[in-house]
Image (tube, rainbow, N blue to C red; front, side, top):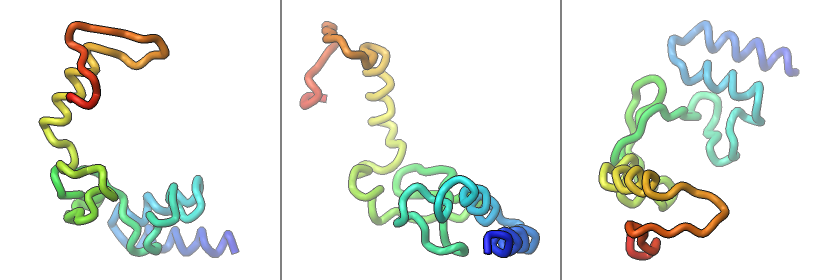
Length: 114
C-alpha cells in the first residue's frame, strides 16, 4: 500500500507544475497526512501551503491568493504582519530579552499598557 501511495504521489508530481503537491508529498514523509494538525489537511488536492501573508491576504506557494476570514483562528485581529505590531515587537525586543530573571528598564511597561 505504501508503494502504491508513493507511486501515486510521483505521478501527481509529474503531471503538474505546481509546488503544492510536491510539498505535500514531502511533508507526508515526515508527518501523518503531511500536516501538523488534522484540521490543516483538506485532501490531497486542496491542502494549502502558505508562503506569504500580509493583512488579511494569504498567498500560497503557487501564487494563488486567499482572504483569511477566520483571522488566523482569532489572534490575528489586525491582520498578518501589521506594521504597527511588528515595529512594537522589534522595539520591545531591543530593550528586554526573554530570560528567567527579573529585569527592569526605565523603558519597561507592564504588558497591559503596551
